[in-house]
Every structure is written in C-alpha cells, then in structure tokens.
Amino acid sequence: MHYRTVKAVTFAIGCLLAAGAIAADSAIESKSPSGAAANPAAKKAAAPVKYVDINSASKAELKKLPFIGDEEADRIIAGRPFLTKAHLVTKGYISPGAYQAIKDMVIARQDSKPKK
Image (cartoon, rainbow, N blue to C red; front, side, top):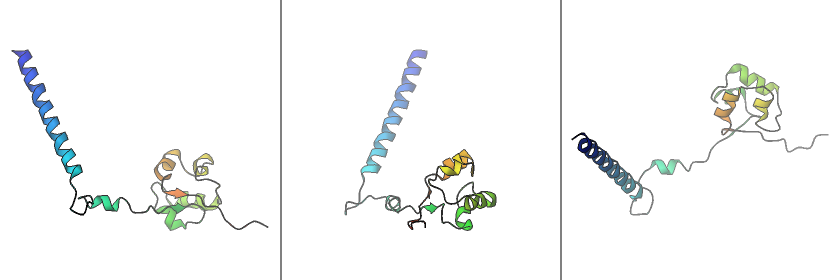
C-alpha cells in the first residue's frame, strides 16, 4: 500500500510541474497583434545603461553607487586617474565586495588630450 501512495503522489507532482511548464511556455509565446511582446517590462529592458566614469564623476555621482560612501568617494577622487576600473580594488581604494557590486556600473575613460 505504501508503494502505491508514493507512486500516486509522485505522479501528481509530475503532473503539476508539467502543467506549470506548459503555462509558462504559453505565457512566453503570447504576443500582441503587432508582433511585439505582450509584457511592457520587456521594452524597458532594452534601455541603455548609463555608466559612471570613475575618472570624472563627482563625489555625489560616486556616492550613488552601492557600497560607496564619503570615504570611498574621497579615496577614488584622490587616486585619479585610473587606467582601468579594476585598479579600484587592486590598488586598495575599495573592497573586493564593493567592486563586485559596482563593476558593471562603472568605466574608466582616459583623457584624450596628449600630455605635454
């Protein structure tokens, strides 16, 4: 009797999972008549990403980044210019955890003017 109960419960769970997968597939495939995705959030995902340049950003702009407070912003400004954004962590300006949180949000543009 125990074997049949386990088998029936396993079958029921499998059916529920299959029904959920079918529902998810049909929701993904649903499109408006114009051919665009029915979900308006999909349109917002294509918005361009605005990066913070660590070589020219103000203190206020730097502080908007996660894990960057007054002290970290001051250290970043004092350590300019950076050749790469990785120098923030390799030179000890911010912690590795903070760098992991902001690495996709920052860039390190170089000055295009030649030095005399």
